[in-house]
Image (cartoon, rainbow, N blue to C red; front, top):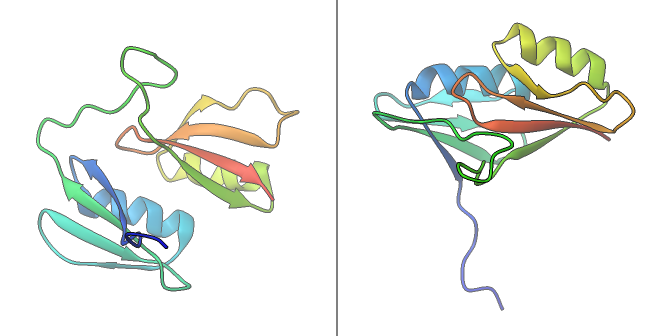
Length: 119
């Protein structure tokens, strides 16, 4: 029996509304809230939250001394189309050169790593 249920994944960032807007464009959903805490209500009932973190330092990928700590895997039907879309929204490629793999690594506008993964 589980002791708890996952409520929401929260990303620290310098601008919660801006980062929620980025992920709303990538994942769909509705941005809700004001100030230091913003929720992204996703289709299907899940949520992703964003919390203001003054002095936020983005994780480094790959780097053992300042590890990524966690990342999001986002499943997509077309890697090339999804890549074009996330780059247009302000993501940057971290490890997307190997086109033979079924996944590519990017950083969101606040520096959090995420992967686009072919389904």
